[in-house]
Image 1 (cartoon, rainbow, N blue to C red):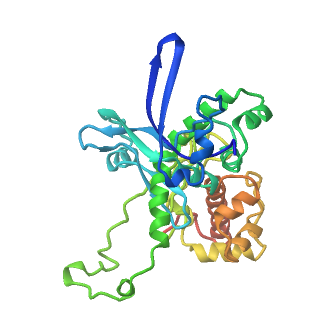
Image 2 (image 1 turned 180 degrees about the vertical axis):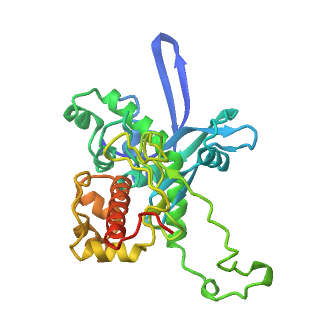
Image 3 (image 1 turned 60 degrees about the horizontal axis):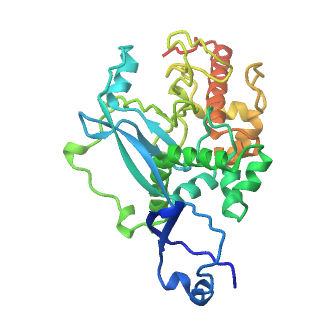
Length: 349
């Protein structure tokens, strides 16, 4: 046998005289089960070797005042990872204050490549405008046994270039992948029997009455500076009534800088509740809006049938966050139509 695969630890790289480089690899006997003799027969013979690191290095910006990462992440019930802005930034955005410059430092972290590749292959990793390649396809093909050279040839670039692009992409999505990995591990854990038991509520912890209930803190989540943002509640559903701006928009007027971006205020649906809006859409009576290019009555029917937004978005070749942004805008328009139809002013209390 003249061919074998194993996963060694690179121990040393020695520069020797006459331009010779000695690479020392270390692995376990179990990793070379049945391969010791063939490997021994290759001593002093030329061989072809390909080394691909199983560890991904990435940088994290740390707030030197709090010693915590500047950017945090949360995962909704469908597995989508969203960026969580620090509380200070949320408050600045609400009050229209100038953004405070946070003192930061860079720290290098490591992550298992298998976790990141799973995140990418499962279709949860975002796309970036400056890396416009189908990395889900590239990673899947590479793990299936294809070479970078073959994939690079199809993309009309060098194998070195595609390796560099894949490394950049893995590093950028690494922190999101780790958060997603926590989510999937927690999802797979069996629920403890006492988790479902109702616990008595202490008097001090009793929920506030309607008159005392505190407003929920705004949650602004995104994926990256170049990726569409979406807001989700604790149940994993998008919060369409207060969807954050996806680009530069006017918070007061709702003016939009592109056809995909929209600023939605909490009063947009007025007294029309979510259930009434969705039932009206499903009835087929909702008007058609020129700026909405998706057949949302049909898509909502699929969503009610049990499909996730991720699956629906994939079937029409767009990201789930972009689809949910358009869905939120569509529901706002339908709600305004219903309010006018009922003789109400949109946003009236």
